[in-house]
Amino acid sequence: MKSKFIKSCEKKLKKMTSKVIIPCASCESCYERICWAFKKEAEVIPRDVPKGHLVVYVGEEYKRFVININLLKHPLFQALLDQAQDAYGFSADSRLWIPCNESTFLDVVRCAGAPQHQNNCICI
Image (cartoon, rainbow, N blue to C red; front, top):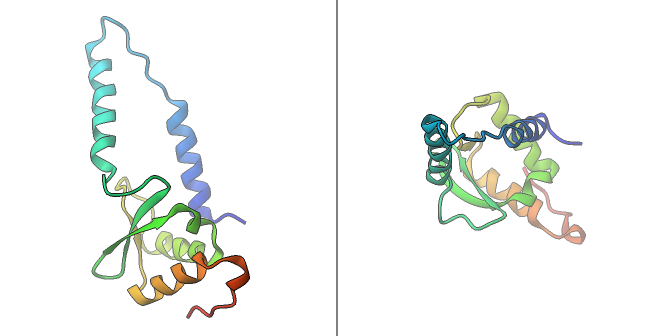
């Protein structure tokens, strides 16, 4: 069962990948738009985030964490994403904000990251 947030992200990604701008030789503005899009993307992706990971900001102080994307599938983490959607909605900003305190977030990450046979932990 996927959360609404993840489904929405998947839809947006499909829309973005289906829109391809093919520049013509005489259209300088098309070329500039494509270059701007790639430059903008390069500025948005932090260089210190390994492949297969993403940055989330947690709590009132927006503390930065780098997490494995596989955590997004876990029901506890999906509950945090639903909470983020309710609190912040969607925006053009590429940052993912999680509205909980740092210790709760770390408990969820610990439980979600534990191997299947060790999933008997309690997260509060």
